[in-house]
Length: 102
Image 1 (tube, helix red, strand yellow):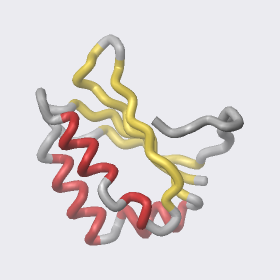
Image 2 (image 1 turned 60 degrees about the vertical axis):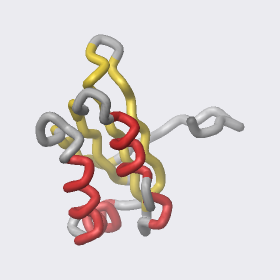
Image 3 (image 1 turned 120 degrees about the horizontal axis):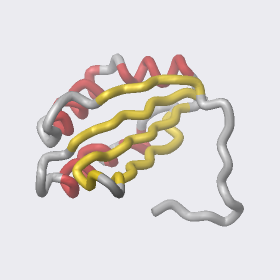
């Protein structure tokens, strides 16, 4: 698996719009596995986005696609600044049996 972690600062009152833009059509992206967004306790405007793909190639194919660029432009407009990206290989994960998504 491969993915990215991004730190983002959402504009006040734009969190719901950001959720809609990030989740819109995500299940139709080849190789997409999951996305999680965390709101930080000590700074509620700061969010951490964690995204996983089935491999590095599918991640990079998506990242370089015109559709992803269009989605990026849409959610970038809802942020105070560019996200801080950290790409890498997902080396392990742990999910409880029977757990559900939020």
